[in-house]
Amino acid sequence: EPEVTQTPSHQVTQMGQEVILRCVPISNHLYFYWYRQILGQKVEFLVSFYNNEISEKSEIFDDQFSVERPDGSNFTLKIRSTKLEDSAMYFCASSGRDLGELFFGEGSRLTVL
Amino acid sequence: SQQGEEDPQALSIQEGENATMNCSYKTSINNLQWYRQNSGRGLVHLILIRSNEREKHSGRLRVTLDTSKKSSSLLITASRAADTASYFCATEQGAQKLVFGQGTRLTINP
Image 1 (cartoon, rainbow over the protein chains, first blue to last red):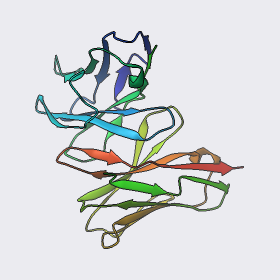
Image 2: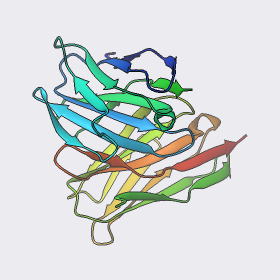
Image 3: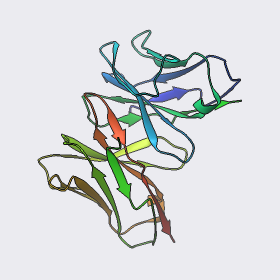
Image 4: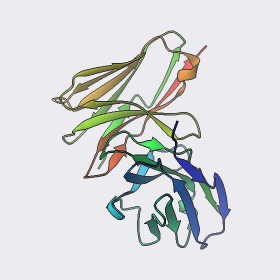
């Protein structure tokens, strides 16, 4: 069964460092998403991406964040200069249709020290 | 603003009992979705109900939607220990923005 894969599963970084989280969405999907979940809290929308551009982004998704689909298969989330409060689980999701069922990866846990 | 909010925040029942979780939302929707999350794992889609549907079934799951009250419920019948998880409703809040509620943490006691 096709699945969304994310790497790394866990990354520890120092405050101020750049981090890139990678996702391989399901191959025939067109809509891509990043969410984050701080431990014990709700799943927060960060950004949606379609047709090689950002469709929607939340207020969390400030200038420190960027997304890219560099090669037609990977979908990356970059945090330019990490802060302590960026520590969270980051989930990638993809969908075959607009606002349809989302398929989530298992997440990348980011710990900022 | 919060779009989908579940209640209760936590629910603990005995195996075999039914579990009901509710979701309320604020603005008009095209569809409402329910997801499940096992601790530390990704979310798994359970069911999607469209705004013109009132009820939908999938195995032991039953979802209702009342657009006049802007609310939905998820019923899990004959609960099992493996149903222990957090359950989230999700609604659209923008063209391609699916927003999740706070979730209901369900514990099934053997």
